[in-house]
Structure formats: structure tokens, C-alpha cells
Length: 282
Image (cartoon, rainbow, N blue to C red; front, side, top):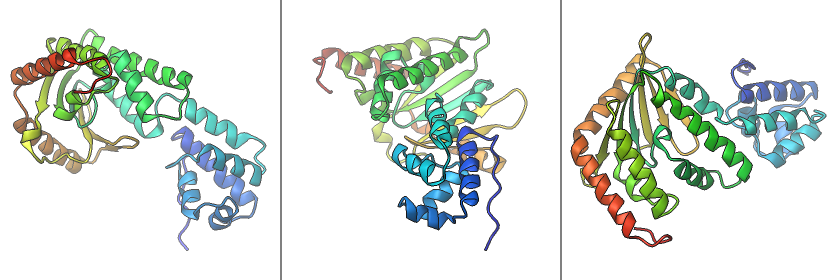
């Protein structure tokens, strides 16, 4: 049997939770399979909890706390994880984004957080996190708006952003929210440090169809890539892999409309939203 994977409790709150769970399970004399049977859930889920790759649902966590005689420690730890504005898989990326001198983004489904209006961010978060309370949503909105200070610095990074056409045509929050959001994109695209392109539907298939992509460059240090889905993300630091993503981004730029053409399309879609009734999709 292979030795259990070493855990680093300092890596994240989820990792700290995992280390605590493993310690309690071993103290109780249970294998992952035996503990899983008592919940009941698959033992592979227990393994993911212990590795910090997944946070247990509230009901499962409550059972783990009782079964392992944790005296509320697991409940408290999970509460801290859920109150943290950024999930573990995004936290390292957010920190690196604040240090970048250049960022290249392809957004498959939504306007990037750095360009979002408050109303758009709130609508998007309510859709993606339906179980969160209004208070939890507001914490996330506030964190997202605070992060936008990156573009307000005296020497902001260059931000080159390719928006899939779906981003500007899907009415997140309704026509009024989208009009305001597209107006903000147009406003920021007039600044020297923000460039926007639109990847039209007619471009067909492309090399980054699995989700969104960001490439970050720094004054010192290697470039990194970050791929993101709706509820997951992966930071890529290996030079060879980053180079592959950089090539994919070059191809996306070639398939996209020019910056001037892109802004014309955004203005046109914005006018379409202006013609809509408040609850009418376009």
C-alpha cells in the first residue's frame, strides 16, 4: 500500500481542514473507507477532503464532526473556509494578478472581474452561487470591486482581453445591467492600458474552448497561465505548458475582430439592449 500523501496545513484553509480531518480519523482508528461507510459516502471523497481538494457539504461535515468527536472544530473550520472571499483554487492566482505587469485574458462566459460593474458582479455571483446568503454574496462583490484597484494604480498593467461573443450577448442580470456593463467595457477600452477584442461566433472552433484563460507576465520571474471553469481553476507554472497556452492565445487573437471592430460590435449590442424591455432577453 502506498504511503499517504504528505499534507501541508499552511497551504490553505482547505488543507488545514484536511490535515485536521486526517488526524481525527487516525485517532479514531478508522480507514477512509470505514469512515466513508459511516456517513455514508465514497471513501474517495474522504481522500479528497483530506487532501484539501474538496470541502465537504455542510450536512456531511456535521456528521464527520460528530463521528470523529471533533467537538465542533470541523464545523468551525468549514465556516472559516466558506467566509473567505476567494476559494483556495483562485487565491494564488488573485495574488499573482496583483503583481503582473501584463495580463492576456480570454473570457469564454463572463466579463472579467477587473472590468465588472457592481450590478453585473452581483448578478453573476447570485447565479453561480445560488445557496449563498445575500450577506455572503455582498462579501464576494466587495472583494471583487476591491481587486479592481489593480487597474487604478499609477502604473497599471497592460490588460489585453478577448471576449467571446457569448459574453456580450448573454444578458446576465437583464438588459439594464448589460447596458451598464458594456458601457464600462467601452470606457476602459479607451484607456491606454486596456485593449478589448471580440471573438465572433463565426470564427468557429478555437484552441481554448474548454473555459477561460489568463496569461500573466511579471517584471521578474516566469510567466504563468491560469485556466478557469465555473467552479474550478488551475494555475500552470511549467514553462513548456505556459508556452503552449501562449501560442493558443496568439491564435485566438488572430481569429478575433480587431480592437476597433470589436468596440463597434459592442456598441451595436449595447444599442440592442437599449431597445429591450427590462425583463426581455435579446
